[in-house]
Image 1 (cartoon, rainbow, N blue to C red):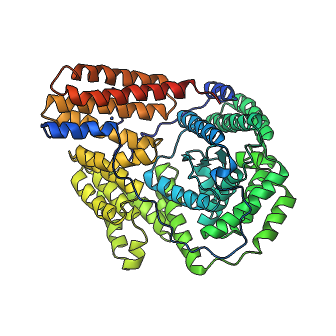
Image 2: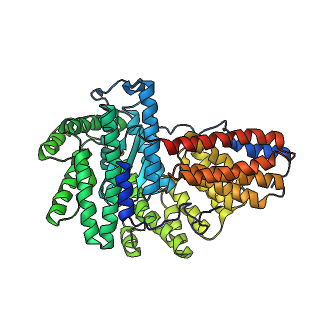
Length: 549
């Protein structure tokens, strides 16, 4: 059984440097397309094969909605789609998630994901009844964002780092939500299929081109860049679609509590970057290619934004404080910032100071990390609380670097009691519990996440690790075998959502063989429902493997 790197304590996803050359380009073109010993505990383990009674409650918004003009949107009752169309869009969205996960380098940090997801879900709720199928953050320096039928929304880390505020970031996401809510991908079955294939193919080719370009293979970069440009030109939205997405996006932003003036500001930033890239004969931002920025459109967006009321100072400050934390968290998780940059920025930025504490922990410089923690804890209570839960998360990661997993769990548990609905705290706490020999408690935290979001690969990997730990530490051979079976099952779910269908089938076949052996033991009656679940999971993987949009 392949295992995750034990050295990556702060993330279950070891960072790997991916080089996208001809193989990835061909992939893009082809897209165009699971320490107790009694029977009751065994039954508890097998319950992992089915469902949990609890799930995290929805995250509550803290922003009041100002009065503004009503959104002109399609019917919220199924978004104006038939049941068959909704089901087809769901299949397309799942297919796109699996392919994107399998071919791009992701930003998996739970706090970053939670922060961007909370913003995205709040924006989406202004215009759509259905929650997005998934939100992906691609670890790539280029400026790009995309959306696909079924409600898959993606954004590059480069877009976040290019923004100067949470409002500017929200403007990009709101624009993509508007494309989905206005069904710009769905004017017909053929157009919808072509748009999706070109969207994913163009995105993967763009990543391939930027990766090769950074590697210095100029000839391959030129070839990929030209094909990328062609694909992005073909997928470009019409002028009327872009103006509608701008207009609806601003309304969505306003109702969600963001400053609509940030949209033309960020567009202007991208426009300047595009002109600079053209002069230097560099690649255009993919977002500009697929969402053409004309002077007329920019002027129209600036004029429209002025009609909205000015955002209150309190909201501006709250948004900016959160963006400061997000910006520097991505800098440190993506290994983009040097010690000098962090040290210099930490003089004026609290977000950079928290990131520097994290960096010191990674470098095993624990005295310096503790010194920064003491400085932050000395802040007025209101300021320190504004840093939570990221401050406690970072503190726990410094402790985990010292193998103080129990202390890390105690720090996180205090925050998790305050914010039981937060996915990031559940994931970090589950990791600390597993490593402090409490895998059963870890599973209690994790299982609701997979029910709430079946595509949550981080949660599936965490469940796999918890069951591997349980299999190693259990004194009961029967319990150990059940834990091994569940570890294989959970691994298959991760492989499924990574687009590795054959690997997922192999994991499930192994789990099925172990379960069939279990039927001949004292656990035979309990093994039957487990076997039924595995059989269904095999069918699900085969269905996903055979699906073609």
